[in-house]
Amino acid sequence: MSLQEAVDQAASNGTPVTIEKDIRLDSPVTIAAGQRVEITAETNCNIFGNKNNNLTNLFVVEASGELSLTGALTLGGWNNTGSILVNHGKTTIDGNVVIEKSTLEGDNMGVIEDNGSSAELILENGTIQNHKIRGALSASIRVTEGASFTMNGGTIRDNIANTSSSDSSSPAVLLLGASTFTMNGGSICNNSGQCGTAVYLTSNAAKARFTMNSGTLSNNESRSYTPKSTPTGAVFVKYSAEFVLNNGTITGNCAYGGAGGGVAVMDELPTVEHGTAFTMNGGTISNNTASGYRCAGGGIYSCSNHVSLLGGRIENNSAYDGGGVYSEGNTEIYTTLHIQNALITGNTADQGGGLWFCPTGDAKLYMQNGAVIYGNTAASAGDDFASPEVAIGAGGNGGVTLPDYFPNGKVIQWFSDGFLYAPAGNRGTSGQGTRYNTVEYAKRVTGVQNEKKGLALKSVVSDGVSIPATGSLIITGNQASHGGGGIGANGGVVIGESTSLSHSISVKKPGIIRAMRTPSLPA
Image 1 (spheres, rainbow, N blue to C red):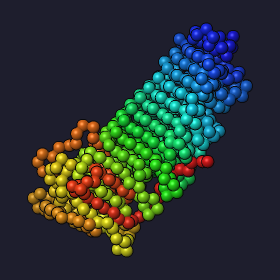
Image 2: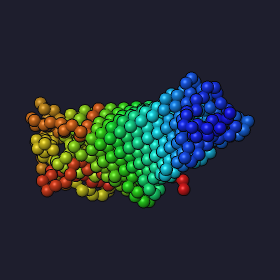
Image 3: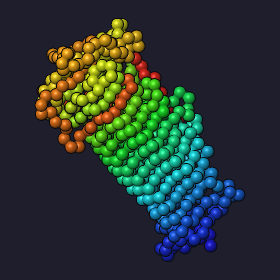
Image 4: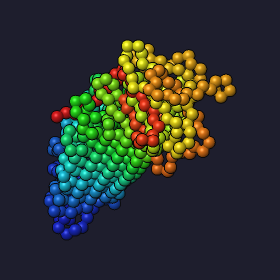
């Protein structure tokens, strides 16, 4: 009896198909509309294609068909040229199932292709591993045309997308169009590619959505395989797409020569604004890196007006600028990042250990739902805040206004802590100003309104200052070799909410263009 015959018989009598030996398929196995089938194995058994039959797909689940893969099954892609599984219905993967070793040479392909508005893929347990993704708009798990993918457990690991088409593909999970991915557990780790090496979500129309409630994205790495294109980190949110992080951990990921080691968010500005969105309500983004000269956003890189950081921890990330977080902006593209109820402490950089703004930076810090900023360290200038003056000929700026109080109403005192100036090119360079010292030098800076000169400052807190309440945002332990250990920006940053009683710090200056090309989305 063939596997197809066994599937059809099981669908009619409701019994599982139990595999007892390895099976070579001569044609795809189809779970037809209306059929419900479980395929399982009690001992290790392989199902793979017959290499002499030039097989494309191994399994196809039609709309309203249901397939459960359980037990000790291994589905191998070493002899077929297409998908191991094409799902238009409902497929659940559980037990010790392994899906491995496909090589996808073509475009628009998934090792698991989850396709259509009625398609539902559920990973309860099992492993998706060792796939090679060589074409464009392809992935180990590709979710398209309104399909949904829910990951409650299991592992997606050791997959590779490393060709010149890799800027539009993911070695792990790719969401296209109005598709959704909900991660409630499990691990996506040790994948290698160029963009979105754990999750890549993008669309030109209806939003693709990724919601992370638990689980781990770890040790994924991004490198450039496409000329003049920027590697991005573990999660790449591009164009009409939205990522919500409620809980879970994004850790140990690296974008070599790129942006956003943990999370990169890029709208299509200045061509069109899609509203590319990232909301961080909780979870941890830690130990991620944007590695290389002038690479930005070790934890998060934001090039969108719809990024809100509201809770969780951003810690121990590193980059050249913006070790924890970076907000992009220049004379061609300008975006603003939003933060509330934050503690920014224990970060380090050469300039602006807590916050650093290049001459294009536009910062507004408000008292209400704002930030507690203290205890950061800068090697050259501005332990807690740094912003260089505008170079001669660079044009005017909106000036700097400093807050008098922290969100809890306690007094904040700003003291001069070195000096910055902006030479040709408008990047902040440390001057010869004296650093803050409680014994020898403590120059209080007060009454700052629309100041156009460079500022390098240390905040000294009064008694009774407390960290924000549980559930707020903690930015700590991040490091930048140049500017902004906690937060760096040549774009906008708004911290807190503006009210008639708010005391704010406001910076807006013209300056350089940071060269950053986003990968193009093929039509």
